[in-house]
Length: 184
Image 1 (tube, rainbow, N blue to C red):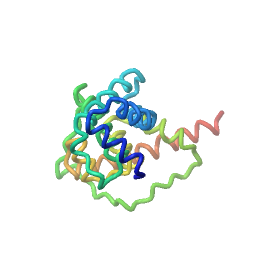
Image 2 (image 1 turned 90 degrees about the vertical axis):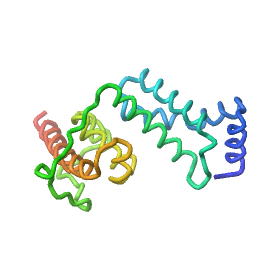
Image 3 (image 1 turned 180 degrees about the horizontal axis):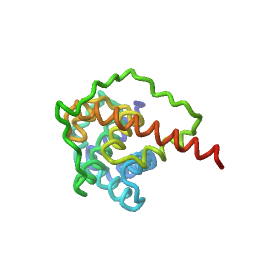
């Protein structure tokens, strides 16, 4: 982090409103994009992002410069998005030992068809929430299963299973999309 950025954060920690607005302006667009991955309604996404920034500013004293500020803020934004979804009665299936399958984290993510990034993102959004959020956190945000487990408050094994099942559904959705493109 450069000195100017570090100075801005120090001013924010002291409650400087102008510095907070500058920091907000620096990160708002990126954090809004992240929020929109989870909250489909743009107005609701703005509200969630605003709440996340408020939470970040009130907890700024907890921020240590060991990690990038953007990464720290991103975690707050994702957690705020997940909390909002949980309040809307998002329910995850608890997996028991009989429904578990062995998941190979190194399994190929390649698909047999040629699709755009936008088509992949759209296809992820059509999946059931329990798969969609695990796929987004794993593939797009880069979290591991332990982190996903903490964010979604699900067991690690559930994260692994939902990732595997979500990947299977995503591949099928993309394959069906490709077949539809050819038939047009």
